[in-house]
Image (tube, rainbow, N blue to C red; front, side):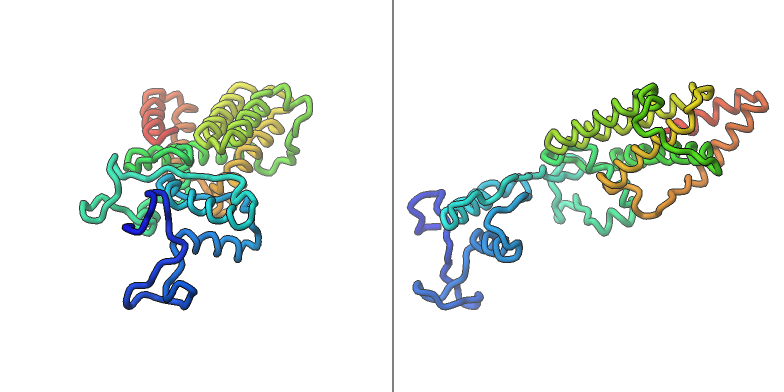
Amino acid sequence: GSAKKDPLDFALWKSSKPGEPAWDSPWGQGRPGWHIECSCMSMKHLKTQTLDIHAGGRDLIFPHHENEIAQSQALTGKTFAKYWVHHGLLTINGHKMSKSSGNFITIKDAVAKYSADELKLFFLFSHYASAIDFTEEKMQEARKALGRFDILFWKASELLKDKDVEPCQDGPACRQAGFITAHKEEFLKAMDDDFNTPKAMAALFNLLNDTNKYIDENKKDPHYLGVIYHAVDILENFARNIFGLFLQEKERPLPQDLKQLLDERAAVRAAKDFKRSDQLRDLLKDKGI
């Protein structure tokens, strides 16, 4: 601090205070500064002088990351990191987390209350560089959104069960149902734009909505099952392989309460009990369906 000639100066080697770890050096007993530790560990363990991606919170840009660049590039003459990914900070109900105010939650607490998929979806709804606010309302939104995936996967599996169906891939039949390709491209474009996950999630929900609409309105299409197979296949692949959702189990059974409501609604509609059907529709709507 007091020995700095300029506020931007930083120490590569610090004199050790009594009781601190210390090593001998030409400048006496001391230890590496925080910034130099990170450059050394990165280069040693990743076995490269140029990192592909360096991540960290936005609060670390200055001084830590700027100092890492200064010392590493002065040594190697090479770019230290090709891409910097700085994530926004987490608040709880609009306030910074702090144990003293009780405004605090750990990952352990969160996974006891919410599923891993609900937490993942909560984070995917915001761009990684944005600040993100953790609230009960947002977690309920994530829960409802996952319920919409469950419903579609269940609906499709009921339609495709015991049928020998090939996905229509990108042939004429799928081009005819052009919504699949449109939303697939929308998703990839969003992810290519600095991992814009909120836009990419919007593309998945557009695909989900249009697939539901297609299922209801195109029963006479000769390629009906192939289109459904392809749409759900794309949806599941992007959600699972890119966003890491639905990894807990290979087949996600529809939650029992949703299945009962859907089965009852199908039965009362067949019996033309439209009053009860409307009540069940409202119940399903409350669950995000």
